[in-house]
Structures are given as structure tokens and as C-alpha cells.
Image 1 (cartoon, rainbow, N blue to C red):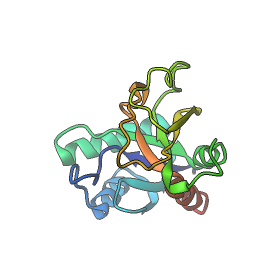
Image 2: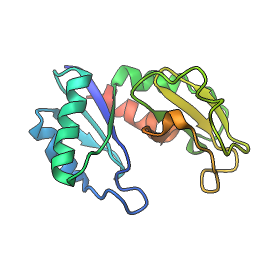
Image 3: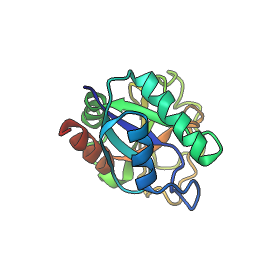
Length: 170
């Protein structure tokens, strides 16, 4: 069975979207996913499912909407795709905790980086269905806005490495 990683958008971040990871695990199991494991309380879950990526996304989003009473976006990648995101990091010599991949559902438009605003020392590159950003002075004071990433969710390279490792070990 394929291994997947689901990344929930705006869960347990800045006091919004509180979701205990035990609840997330239960939702995944109720959706028929197996070998469910969560990683840190920010909406990362690894599991196996015989469903397609689109059906995994739809099933989990339906469970989350029923729980939260509002839509919760989910970005899904296979174990192989997550490992490829890590391997394709265009900033391998930069601090992994200051370098993120912003996961989006579709390939980013070719002009996605030109539309960004508020850029100071951040460096950006396009990925397959990701936008990579290295925050030179850190994320806290950044005013970077990338319209193409509006409905995406970011994970730093340390988290991506751990999720890829977890998924490949299922």
C-alpha cells in the first residue's frame, strides 16, 4: 500500500485551529488509513492507504470539516514525493530550520516569484508542487507574501526530513 504524508493547513499554529493529534489519528483510522503516525502537534500525519492521493485528501478534509465545523485544507504527498522535495532543496547549505517548502496542490505558475511582495533577504525557488523559501534573517520578521502560496502550508527542512523518513519506514 502507498505511504502518504498529509499536511494540515493552519492547525495548532498561533493559537488557531486546535486539533489534538489523538483526534487526528482517530480521524485517519476512521477514514480507513493504516499505520497512522503523527509528528509534532502542527498537523503532520503519515499513514498507508490504498486510496488515490485525491481520495485521501477528500476523505481527510471531510473528517476535519465535520470536526472543526469549517473547511481545513490538507496537502498530500507520497513518501517518494516527500523524499524528492527534500532532495530538491535548492538551499542545502542554508540552515534547515530557516528553509521551508511551501506545499501547494498544483505546480506553481512560472511567474509566482515575480508576484511576491515584501521580500527583503529571502531567497525563493520554484519546485514541482512547492515553493522553496530561505529566510535569511528568520521568519519572525519577514513580510514576504507569495500569492501563489496563499492556500499552501509550509514545513521546514528538518520537518520534511523527518516526515520523509517516517513515511519510508512504514
